[in-house]
Amino acid sequence: MDRLRQHLSRRRRSSSSSATPLQSPRSPSFSSTDRRKDEQDASPRRLYVTSDTHDFDSSIIARFQGEGFEVEYLPFLGGNEDVERDRKDLENLLHEREDDLEPGERYAVVAYHRPAFLLLASHHQSTTATNPLPRFKKRHRCHLFFYPESEPGFAEHPSPTYDRISSRLAWSRALDCLKRGFGWPGGSWKTPDVETIWEEYWRNLLFDANRHAEAEQHAAKTPKMMIGSGDPNSLDRQIDETPLVNCVPTMVGGSDERSISTFYATAFFPTGPPSQHIRLLSRTVGPDRIVDEILLAFRHTEEIPWLLPRVPPTDRDVKIVLVMTASFRAGKLSRQNIYWDQASVLVQIGLLDPALVPGGFRGTGKTREGREDVERLPVVGVEGVERVLNG
Image 1 (cartoon, rainbow, N blue to C red):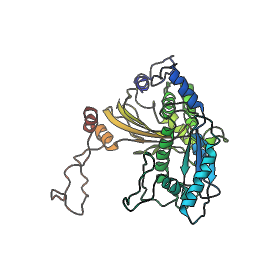
Image 2 (image 1 turned 45 degrees about the horizontal axis):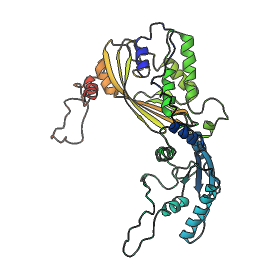
Image 3 (image 1 turned 180 degrees about the horizontal axis):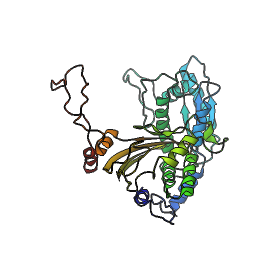
């Protein structure tokens, strides 16, 4: 991020130096412990998906494969009236797969519908007269998440109760559990780490905008890092996910390869004033997403198409905090949303005066202080940013 900040602050100068990683790579280690760990990492990460149907959502299978798992679907129809018998039959089905494992190999199970209930029940004992509460047989930590806005089956695309929002949330939680069980963070994975992908994304923004050939080259390379681009037979094409880049306050961005290419070539960094200066304030990394908090400062001497589209330069100093959320699928960038306080930007460039309340405004009641009018709009300028920096 410092490399990008330095580049933006001097992008008008010609440079022959090549881009370097935004963060220093980890130093290699050659200890025997690491060698044993590498051997362990090289073993297949087997994942068994089970549900009570003959077929299963192929896009979910493709997602797991795209994250580096060797996936096998195990249909378990059950059908016994005796729950205990069904539970034992399912355990036997999984134990058969255990027999095929090599020494040191591990596996995980993702269960849907009735098999999910049966596997959870496997870790409980029956209640007794002296202890009416079920007890765990094993010392396993069990996280239970609830999705009150959704109905059963919400995570599967063919299901009539499919809920895209809850499905994405459940996917992130399940992937986090699985990857941690197989040694993440760390280890050797077929799919690049999301932070590695994100750093490469920023490197593709490090070009001299005055050198048009280089600008076009990098602008074309960035969309190819997004899901659904490149080889039509690639695994990420099987995943039901549409690429998206969205500047939320202005709705500038793109949702296909052409519009995203145009966005990166003509609207986003480093297009804009040469004084643009960015600094990474914080970063939160998950198994399939990154959230960056970034300080952007500049003098408004040029139009900024993604931030202030169709607004002429005002020659005013501006500071804002950007929040960038990026999600990843199968080693590619899937969605990127960029948020900021647009009211603060408008105050700082003089387009919005907090003291000017529209004369036609009429409330339908009183405030907690008993007032019916508004003296000042509830917006701030650079003060809000300074509180973030100094808090």
